[in-house]
Image (cartoon, helix red, strand yellow):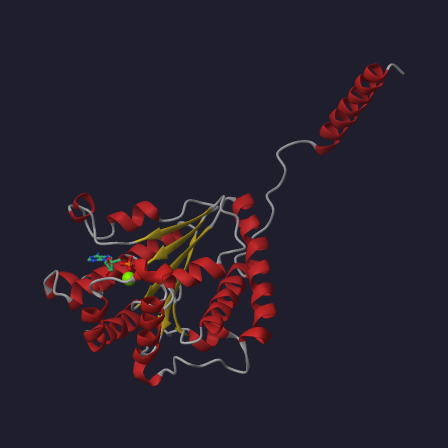
Length: 287
Ligand code: AMP
Ligand code: MG
């Protein structure tokens, strides 16, 4: 199954999230059976990231957005486990600092955007400025409503500079969120993940859904598409996202850069060094 085609939001498409099944697992029957397939995707991502880094020409930006407990951290932990930390980074967007709030809303996102050769994952992102900001009325409508176009222009600019952008919305049901809240409550090692705001945010589910539906409709573009990923099953979420990333990277035309040296000359230098080393070892042994 081609999950890029299946889960992509077409530009301008209105998605009704309550009509998207968050428990979808396609033809995959179980975690165990899907695991080797996901491992293949992750291995492919790893190889392609090596080329992206070596090539140093393009970059990849991955945006993860979701309601609480939908699994953004889990995606970072599992899907990117194969990537080399050299050339990969994750940035979590929290409430803006004083300095960040004093600048335009894209300032902090732009600073963290990937340099050539890098993969950057945004755990939350500049989209919070049309999500939490809208739902909690942290800015006037006349301010946040202009941001969709500004985001599209920003992402277009990054794309023109060689950044490939993929955006994932992790879709879970309210029942699944509550089940995950319970797991957090029952497991002291996860208590640190519990926030004071978890239940008050949950009360705003329909407001967030509305805000997300607008984001998906207004900011999914050919160069920076949104994917709505059914995420009630963590293994399926990871499987679909890893496939979409690997398939996209496959298309980026990544290749090893040409060598900057004359390999014949270097080979001669190598043999000379090898002979010298052998003589040294011989001398030490007293041959
Ligand atoms: P977490 O992802 O659980 O660490 O929580 C980060 C919190 O920061 C979430 O409640 C976000 O909604 C909030 N946040 C992120 N960006 C913004 C923003 N631009 N304005 C206000 N709150 C934000
Ligand atoms: Mg949280």
